Image (cartoon, rainbow, N blue to C red):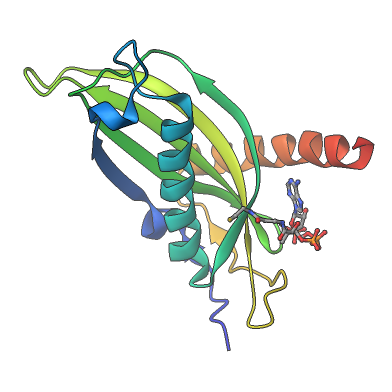
Length: 159
Ligand SMILES: CC(C)(COP(=O)(O)OP(=O)(O)OC[C@H]1O[C@@H](n2cnc3c(N)ncnc32)[C@H](O)[C@@H]1OP(=O)(O)O)[C@@H](O)C(=O)NCCC(=O)NCCS
């Protein structure tokens, strides 16, 4: 039986670190967008699994923006957090920064909003625990996530 006790957003945060190696990069020496998406999806999935304590699948990735290139040899830091829980679905935000290992300087490189769905023992969507916002910032994130969900659902209805 899954534990549906309400959870704090802080308990499921993820910080994931990767070193960009040549196989991760294009001929221009910058990370492939697809590789950054893979890391983003992984970080988001871990945050969602930590929240739900259930297996999850990615239902949707929206608003993934590449803000600056990430070079081979840089350290990529991905931070994922659950913004809101609806029923079985959760919106997870991932922010990606590239760190220069020589001096520690960091630059925002990517941000994304993903929808992950918790699955029950039968492999079908199952209710995830409620998220308890603790701070004004977390409440704001949850409100914004509700607005994004409405837009997502409208797109889904049209598709
Ligand atoms: C995601 C999936 C489980 C949804 O199943 P479904 O039978 O459509 O179930 P429902 O319509 O009841 O949707 C379940 C939840 O997912 C949400 N959802 C489904 N598709 C969505 C989409 N495209 N965007 C955002 N949310 C979506 C629904 O809003 C619902 O959320 P709620 O419970 O919080 O209200 C199913 O479509 C699936 O398995 N897709 C493939 C996932 C996959 O292979 N991902 C890549 C590997 S991880």
